[in-house]
Length: 130
Image (cartoon, rainbow, N blue to C red):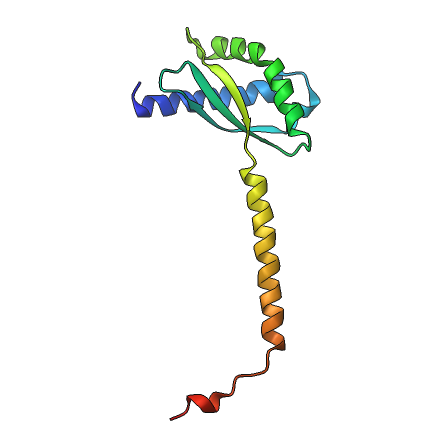
């Protein structure tokens, strides 16, 4: 499959899995799950599905999705009208949470630096004169 075609197929899978998880899977924990990316294998036999959620128990979310994997693949087959649907491998992606954490750390450091700058004595500018 060409790279462009593979990307388009991955995008369709991502969109459909997102809809299936939020609308068809009858579990209230799935309402807070988002599909970030789908990366199919070169031979399309499998696809990694990267997810994010605001649920605290991410392992539980993965367990529910693994249990519903057969249902999700059947729904994908109906919606995509494809003969072969890749085996789905669900992976929790914590990069968004990590980014939020790092943004908070950086903001605290900037605030600390600004406080330190205000408390610093003024520079003796006489050392810069001719």
